[in-house]
Image (cartoon, rainbow over all chains, first blue to last red; front, side, top):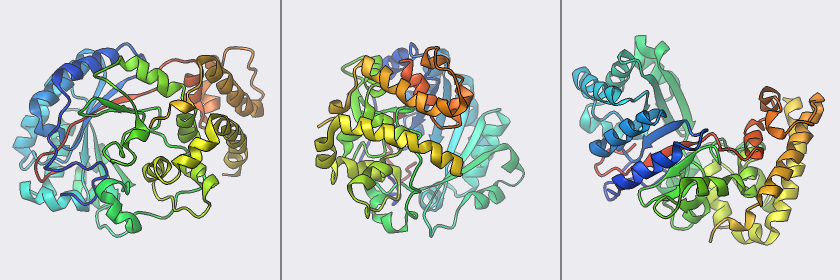
Length: 309
Length: 77
């Protein structure tokens, strides 16, 4: 199993959101004007072709921008890659996001190798898809953005290559020491409240949901369940939760330093895990009013920090 | 456990958002006599609070629905 997987995806998990709830989620999202992008990710969404095709088609019919995140196992040859991408394009796919790094490559070799990434990217570019190769790194990994650009050769100018550090959650917590240096002392989480994720059991998280499968901290990002309520009700709770505002605009790592200046903060998702476990009692005791007041104080401080940049 | 203890009422949310936006916009001398959501978003974006404007207006967040499925082979994404 991929050592860097921060959400615990594995051969032992084959759960998938039932089709009826895929349709429900998309229908309900369609009345929330600012939801514009629908992303199929996982795990590996192409392993559920019927679900994936339904998702792309339904989402496109509702007018959403559609994106698939994949490891490109299906692109052993350029011909194979073209077949897959053409089919998805016909259904309405607009963006292909290929995950590729040292960790993916270990298993991608079973289905070809790094050439899969080039084939998938080429097929996507030919079909006019916005194409991204996303790299996950530690301080010791070989593959980074410049490696990928070289690999892509003539395609490099037409493909966005993005790299990020691992989130040391779930299995990737084993890599904590190799993760990265501590986060800078400011900068909120761009995902909190601006992305929501829906999981196979219907749980909705207020962010990309890296800790949603962690038994100790999953509850922290879970804000509702699509099988039991309207998506709008969940979004409404997200919008009115001052702790999510704090995480979004100031950052969970800034918050946690208020409790323990020495705490290591190597990734925002890991910090939320700590807030949900080690520091939850402290946070709960301080309560809503404390968070409101500290948020005001920190926002005031943003002026100083931005001007100092 | 859940985060419900940190929920604001709609009125609290609007008031707090306005407070925060005023702190930011004041530096540019932006008038906030208009409702929060018409404050020029470009100015606010400089201070990373653009989305807060949206929150203040109690309209939907710029959200992406992520549909999670799970890998069942040795390949994971």
